[in-house]
Structure formats: structure tokens, C-alpha cells
Image (cartoon, rainbow, N blue to C red):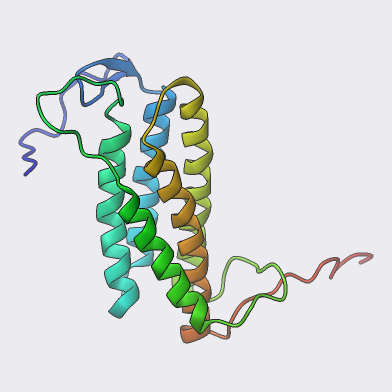
Length: 190
């Protein structure tokens, strides 16, 4: 159990932060950027959960917990020598997302076009979270160029963006008027 008794420490005032293994890195280090985006993604999902209930709400709560696991995973270099077993995402968490995606897809019409992010507020929040997940994925790829990362971490973020896309479509189908379809060139020429 984590116990925080003091919120500010002043140890980051010089532009550095500590990783789980105690090493210090600049606050704009690709590792910190990646887990910072995961934190932003978690907050966006929290916004999408407002007023929710049922299966989607339960899944989003689980995802928020998984994102804290992911943040801990990213904040712990793979080569770190620790006195305890580091928290790492595992492939089962990726597989769970795939099962959720398949379940929603089975209830949705096939796509006929790209869709516009939006619809009802909850779906729009899920679309926003999806774009943050995609940015996080790009940042993990950048991090992976200079440091080894847990393979399941990248797979999880990739699958999560797909999940958020399908969940937004599902919400629009159930709570709104369905997908907002992109019409190529709709307003060309005036």
C-alpha cells in the first residue's frame, strides 16, 4: 500500500525527478514524458467515467488501475536492481483489452467510413482519451529507441487506443445517434 504523507518534496525544483530505482533524470527525459502522458491519459479516462455505470464503467476503472501499473512499470528501468519485484504489465492485461474490443465490435455495425471524434459527451471524452493514448504510444516508441522497455507496455497502450475507439463508438450507438461519419470533400468549393 502506498502512503503519502507529504505532497511536495522540493527535490524536483532543479528540473530532475527520481525513478523507482533511485536514479535521477531530467523531467523532460523520454521515460518521464511517456509516464507523464500515461498519467494524462488516466485523467482523461476519469473524465469519461463521469456519470457512467455498467460494464463500460467497470472496464474503465480497471483500465485506470492498469495505467497506474503502467506508470510504475515505465518509471522502473528494466535493468534496475531492486530489493523487491518491480511492478510490470503482463501480456494477460493486453489480452483482456482484446477480449473487450471484440465484445464491443460484435455489437456494432461495420465501419463504412472514417468517423469524426464526437457525438455524445461521454463518447467525445473517450475519443480524446484515444488520441492521448496514441501520443503515449509514440512516446513509448521514442523511449524504446534509447532504453529497453517491457514489451507488454507498448502492446497495452496500442490496444488501449483501439479499445477507446470502439468504446466511443459503442457509447454513441447506445446513448447517441451512432457514428458521425467523415464525408470526404464535403465542403470543397465553398
